[in-house]
Length: 91
Image (cartoon, rainbow, N blue to C red; front, side):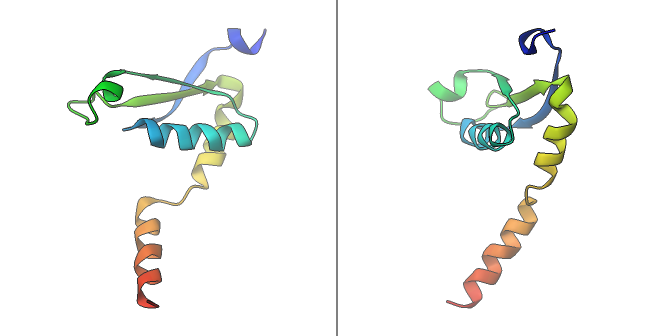
C-alpha cells in the first residue's frame, strides 16, 4: 500500500494558518508528512468566528505514534509564558 492510500488520523486541531505551518515544519523535519483540512475563510477574513478558522492536521496511521511523540515534546503555553516572565526579570 502506498503512502497516498493509507488512512489518515487527526493529530491536532489549531486556530490559524501560521500555527499549522509551524507544526507541519516540525513534523516534516522528523520525516512525517501531514495534510491540512480546514475552511479557507481565514485567508479572506483574518479572524476566527464559530470555528471558521479551525485547521485540522492529519498524518497517516503509520506515522501517528511518531507524530504524537514529536508534538508531545513541544512546550505547553504556560511554560512559554513562564519563560517569557523569567526573561523579563533580567532586563
